[in-house]
Length: 105
Image (tube, rainbow, N blue to C red; front, side, top):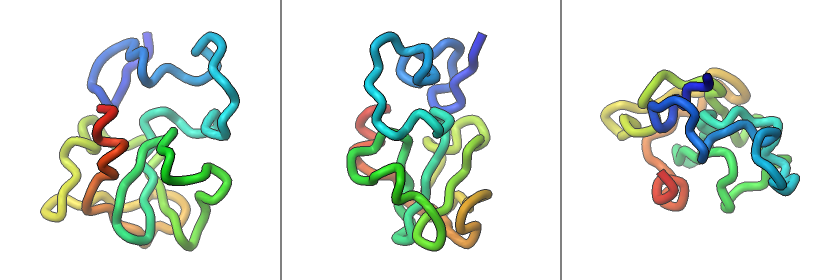
């Protein structure tokens, strides 16, 4: 049974690994863990699948990321509780969420 850290639930259909999504098109996001949080140099956090970024562009120095954030990290993200990248450019810190990504939550 898979646990979704983003939605804090088991077997989340929205965050199932791409291989298990029947007929899902290859969009470049298949290498990203569904719960990842991607951090842009602007301090804005994105989720895998965000239409604002291209997966092949996600690399240092512009981006950092957290492939396995703690449970509820996306919801807690705020200027008073920033999230620091653990991979890529580890100097990146997210202080706000992408509004498009947040709307899908």
